[in-house]
Amino acid sequence: MSALFIFFLFLLPAFLLLTRRRSSKRLPPGSLGIPIIGQSLGLLGAMRSNTAEKRLEQRIRKYGPISKLSLFGKPTVFIYGQAANKFVFTSDSSTIAYQQTKSIRMILGDRNLFELSSEDHKRVRDALVSFLKPESLKKYVGKMDEEIKMHLELHWHGKEQVTVLPLMKTLTFNIICSLLFGVERGACRDQFVTNFEEMIEGMWAVPVNLPFTRYNRSLRASQRVQNMVKDLIHEKRMALEQKMASPHDDLITCLLSIRDQDNLQLITDKEIIHNVMLIMVAGHDTSSVLITFIMRHLINDPAVYATVLEEQEEVAKGKLAGELLTWEDLAKMKYTWRVALETLRTVPPVFGGFRKALRDIEYGGYLIPDGWQIFWATNITHMDDSIFPEPAKFDPNRFENQASIPPYCFIPFGGGPRICPGYEFARIETLVAVHHLITQFTWKLQCSDSSFIRDPLPVPTKGLPIQIMPKKLI
Ligand code: HEM
Ligand SMILES: *[C@@H]1O[C@H](CO)[C@@H](O)[C@H](O)[C@H]1NC(C)=O
Ligand SMILES: *[C@@H]1O[C@H](CO)[C@@H](O)[C@H](O)[C@H]1NC(C)=O
Image (cartoon, rainbow, N blue to C red; front, side, top):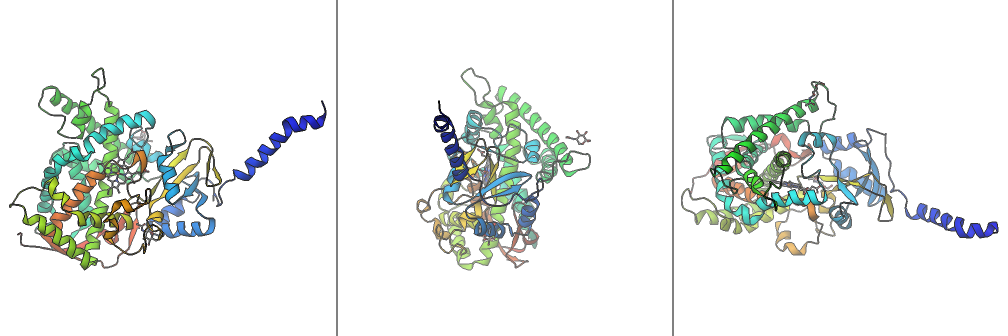
């Protein structure tokens, strides 16, 4: 056999393959920065001073829609836009996986929804959704209403000045304790709150497990919270066995009651504990930020304020004194919800997120190598003027016809099979809270500047201190 023949038979295809590989599968542009620390410190710092979007925009101008950088010590590809969002949210779990930082995984536990994939993810998620879906949650509107009224009695009435963000965190945490975990007001709930606060302090900390580090304190607090949830599960299981509790009482009794074909508990105790931890974190900061920024926007925008007030007074007029709000009342709060959606577009509580490539992926003409992180950002798509004309303008009427917004473009709750399952819960608590705030109080801002920092969730200046005046109740 001639050498030429060998070349044609074996070497040429290999040669072509190699050159093809090199030309069609190149890495995205950008710089990986200093190894290990990379650009993550830069990005976290930028988040704090709220210049992160500007940085990302500069990056887009410099490198185009796909670029590489190094975040949290890992090589990362940053992508954005409708197609990118669709790719991130709908790729199957053998292509890309969820990726949390080590701190978050260690603090929340390895069986929470963020860590699960494929069948396990579906099983646990379906169980959570069986409680969080609208048809199930509609029964709890009254209970939510009671929690919010009690909160206003305790922390707002009789005060002249309050700071909105920390109070909204207290409120949303209490709502979660009551509706999801069935922990009523009292010493137990207070202890829960204290431990929980200590736990989340270290979520974004550098994972160095030495005594006196933030991370170590956080891990210890996490152990205490997990033990409390364990006790709670034990109590509720006994109560269910003795028919002293019902599966519909709260999320935990609901999860304990879901059975497989052999009548065994479908969701393990560990999965219940770790997902309770996740929901405490995922559910309370996000909605407290939303309600806070709605309050700030309302007072800065008299036209929007007047329309929301009119809608809410109309609902209030239809109620007897002390009568609780119902699911049907919420259906009348259409404009208020559009204001909330526009707030989520302009100040998305979740900045973006991370995924991990599980194999070499070709995307947009570039290679995303196996093991690299993929970073998606909410804000860049929300501020795209080809999707939302005049993106800087606050215009709730964009959401009059939600179907007119193209898919994967409005993504405050993510998308695809991992879209936030707390959407309805957040909707109910936001509407009920705005209802009572606007019908019971008028308020004035004490800091007029409209900026905020990211920590990593948006925080308005000084947490939004306001002066409040009670209204005469109708
Ligand atoms: C305004 C309020 C909220 C916002 C903006 C929000 C946002 C998000 C986003 C963006 C994701 C997806 C993250 C990703 O794909 O990387 C998510 C996931 C999640 N959220 Fe929410 N959330 C909110 C309220 C809630 C509430 C009230 C709960 C619980 C009652 C909740 C529970 C969860 C859970 C369990 C996941 C993980 C879902 C999965 O991986 O399958 N969220 N949320
Ligand atoms: C905190 O640090 C101490 C000392 O290094 C260690 O013994 C302990 O296990 C750590 N706590 C947790 C929860 O990891
Ligand atoms: C989103 O990006 C715009 C433009 O860069 C910026 O003005 C705005 O503050 C950002 N909002 C959030 C919530 O990050």
